Picture (cartoon, rainbow, N blue to C red):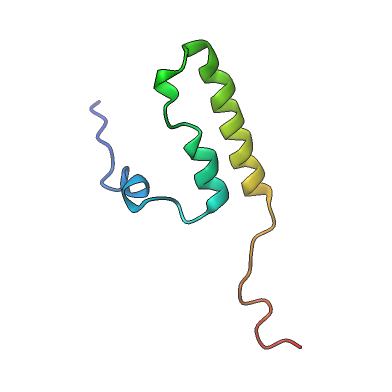
Length: 70
């Protein structure tokens, strides 16, 4: 089976970010990972994974919630 990346695979990087600063900050720690010793990769990736999980667990921001109230 030949795996082809989707047309949008690089869209996030090309656009300059995800639009979520917490996600962008977590992902930015992966920059330069290839230049670090391999034995450090797992810890870096685990930290990124935890940061992304924490972000997903955050309360959603509803910008329309306050409109028309008060």
